[in-house]
Length: 431
Image 1 (cartoon, helix red, strand yellow):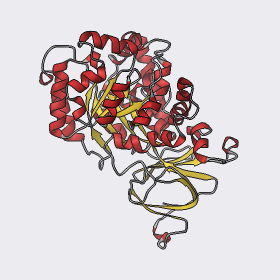
Image 2 (cartoon, rainbow, N blue to C red):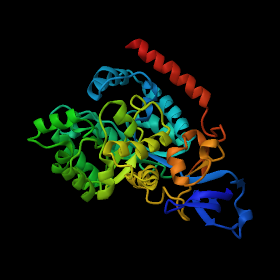
Image 3 (tube, rainbow, N blue to C red):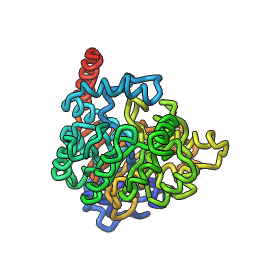
Image 4 (tube, one colour):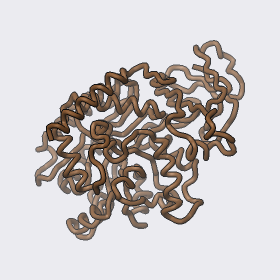
């Protein structure tokens, strides 16, 4: 495809009008202000009038099959939300339930310009199938709850993860990668954490975990581990010797921010989920000032309710100004970078997340002719504070269109909606 006379957000996250962008195979092959000399080799020419092309979004923390729980677990703090609603519901989910829930999640994400996500959940073979069929990309880890004082090798998930890594790491032309997982400090043991670190290090894989999400979590962790907070506890076990995505990090102090920065941890900020569960406001402006790798996630649909990352970008750009009483913190460039390039890097995808020649063609196109886009005084502020996922008219993953003008070439949306509705109703009736 060759995008003609289209405005872009370039590799420096600056607005450039009237550009030509050419895609060959799965890569961006050309960017310029004039048509490429070999324009006739690109196939379809896409008229960019009234459109804006930007990097597609990367959801750095999700539990995507929780689309089944949308609207089910409401108005509860984290621990009651988990124990009273989520875990009983999830205990009744079959592998097929996970498959259809993820098909719908892929449709929703593609609709809103998301091409990649990091997913912590169960039923990995079914998740792989759904993602591969949808044409998206994901880093998957199998959720681990480990309360027993025994080695990780004695948990059945250990052997399953060995199988999944062998079978699925690099699957679908590299679109699917496998990570290891420690759900959280309060759902694991020091022995299990240390064992997982050793295995992931040996295999050269990444790790995905929750940390410092609530004040209660931090205080209970300190009580269990001689005053160590979750971040300091994980640091003591060598967890941050690996490439780590740590979700939430709401209740962190300056010393912990220093650890996150020095160890190159990717902090998956989840502003909607953190507010919805009453968890608090992460010190994102401090993290950005210190150089922490901040990326952006939706979390699951029981604590956010939608996969529209434009809504999360809006929150990230807005709420920390109010939380710090400083209107100058967190710029649109920082928000966009968190939602795109940093999310891709958190998955270890060095060649993704930028509109730049040679990068993977992960792109989304916005219709910017609506009244909320006028005037275009500063396009980046419009994207973060005026735009929404409904403005996305085309989403491309690795050079293939996965959503365009109300159509999903790879997904039967009506079937997915019907399956998810029926399966959610069945589970609720069983509870």
